[in-house]
Length: 274
Image (cartoon, rainbow, N blue to C red):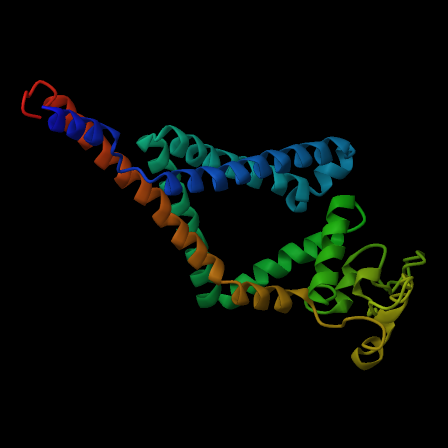
């Protein structure tokens, strides 16, 4: 009888749910949940600081709106994963798994479309970058984003540095009386890490120079090709998302097995030989 009692306690204490899988999923979702809330807060704060006219003029290329949209989407997805793993809720975990699957399929579809229709995709990217160049001085967030991108990718403009002529402050027309006429932003400039003070005026008048001459002062290659090459070299992120799809599914299967075990125990509690 003592042996049957010990066996019963052992059966009741046994769980198919792996604590490592459960809390690993919870930890990473909690981390990205907090990050998503910070992203939304920063986006809303940046949006509220903008003047109404400037905010509406740059609506299509506003980094604050992008930050808010991505933050809200990430918040909803990670909420399902965080609460679902902690509470062992199959419905929330399935919703989390479906969202990850949709994100993976969207990334995969975008990669395929970009490869098959490379000219159209490049044209769309060029259109977005051209619109951002036009509004470069209208939005400080957009300006900082463009400067960051040009410094990180060592590029200038969309196709070439002369794309900056699309901006009202940098164009080379005779009507432009700005001191920035025929110039490019300082983020296009060549600089050495050993230089303590950067020459922010190195881009002045470079649009009047040919590629060889301008190449002595700035990066002459456009950012579109650099961006496309970066996306191609980071396709391994798709593999990471695909691997992440397996984790919630593993936990869901473990929870289902645990539910079956609990039902089995309840059905046999009245059995004197159990």
